Length: 465
Ligand code: 4AD
Ligand code: MG
Image (cartoon, rainbow, N blue to C red; front, side):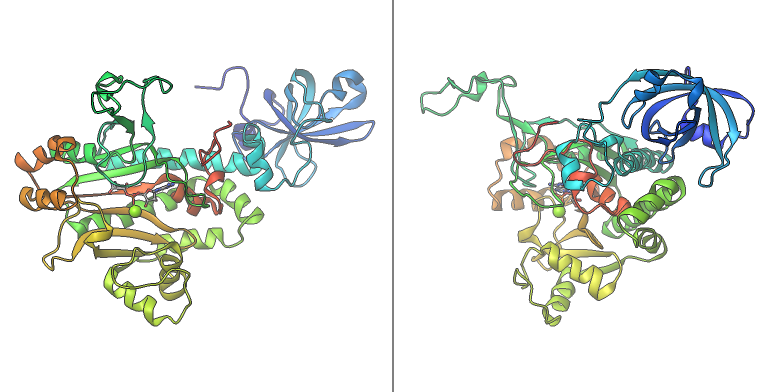
């Protein structure tokens, strides 16, 4: 289907139909020229590239042309001609203009180019109109599409897991409570505890930190599922890699052991990066030029390289031998910090690393216990510039072992009876992982702050737009 009433800038720039009449609509990036001719760079968000409009000034009303300023929205009709200038193959010789919306140059915040990313975060409602955010948002879309395509082509079903949950058993992080109780007058029971039986769902509920537990229910029926939805963590971590609301992709597969889980994670990421290189070439070239001269090289590197697979224990040994002064100490049993992960990936191996067999005490209750009694079949995929991009594991499918671990950690079984039922009835070896969508986008776009790869970031003290 054609775009109604106009041709997109992306399509007209590829058109061979010079001499024909077209209508375009979009936002003015720049206007320059003299009293005879004006050149307007028009962008409609369909591409990083602008269409050059050539306007013979004497043919138009002066007042109308004055309204064409950076940020204004216009419709232009005209003939497509081969461009005389360099930089673009075609341009439009304009015959008619309509102004949809002006943008007063005195106070339009994007009047000038070259704003910092920090400033643009303060005007997140307008930053999609910049080249950088246009590129990032188109890449974000392309990656979301590629994720669905990858799983669909490989026999996975998209499972919609709930966003509101009554279980906080995952232990992945602090949760946002969901309630309709009147906070100024909370109902209390006879022990003076808040009476959640009067709350909307009749129990204490929160926003989910992960779709995994419900994902497992799906995998143990449909064999291979994935979730792709928003997740919420209420930690007060103000870092360039954490959001309070982020998107996560969680495949969960019956009959996969940890080795196949790692193979899938590696194949999946490589597919996505390759997809970006093939389908987002213009946007990536722009980001490479503007922000990160090594971006394209790094992306190609990931596609071409085998990921290192390493036991946690060996990883710790390498870190201890490194003679680097880390901020956080390294010892067997320590939860590795981004500085440690990045040392392994960027300095030691110079490749993505999949770290496995972590100490059970630093990982979630559901991970498959190894025979050594100390470690679990966890896997974290560690990436250059980012650190952890994927966390996952083989799951403990044995009822008795899983129940013992739940009891050991004093997790209330009343919240998890439905989860334990999968191990009671037709249990199976199974595995899965979670890919942080914005962490993937940090890698693919080369942006260095996670607030810059989501349209509207939710971080502590920040939910304005
Ligand atoms: O390692 P995590 O906590 O794993 C889970 O939630 C498992 N239930 C996944 C599974 O096995 N199905 O989170 C998975 C990934 C991390 O590796 C990271 O990429 C991302 O989610 N992530 C965050 N991204 C942005 N902001 C945050 N606060 C994040 N916390 C985790
Ligand atoms: Mg993790």
